[in-house]
Amino acid sequence: HVTQFVVLDTDWSRTLAAVRRALRPGGHVLLDSRNPAGRAWERWDGVVRTVAVGPGDDCVVMTRVLAVRGETDPVVDFERHYRFTDGHRVRSSGSLIFRRLCTLESDLSRQGLELSAAYGGWSQEPPDDNHANDTRRPVRQGAAAARRQQGQRSGRLSGQPDGCRPQGHRCTGHGLWQ
Image (cartoon, rainbow, N blue to C red):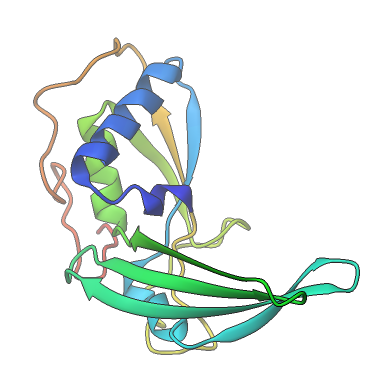
């Protein structure tokens, strides 16, 4: 989910432009992003878990959600507290953006990339917005495959759709194309 750590629009555009330059025409890249309709951050706050980091060595990890900014493609600020068996403690913080599928498709298109597939997880299950309030079946948007369009040269394209409404499609409130 490294794409979720690229929060600023300018950095995201530069990242996608670099991906496009690195791909040959028809080449693919896999992206991982979480569906904002699942509101996963609501299940993180205050959660404590133990992670094995070596033989006989565990680390207790606690996540705190500090803020959620934005409604459509929310940015979640969080911090993690780590306590190792030897008593050593570490704290880290970060921000993740939860982009809707239509946002991903529009952003890719502006950089001369096209969304060739979208899945609800690494097993290629379909994206799922139907169970947003069911914590037993979390809403998934796990993997997306993008490819560089055939016949396109490097550089920024003009005339690409803006926002979340590529020509001939409409974005539902849950971020899925219809």
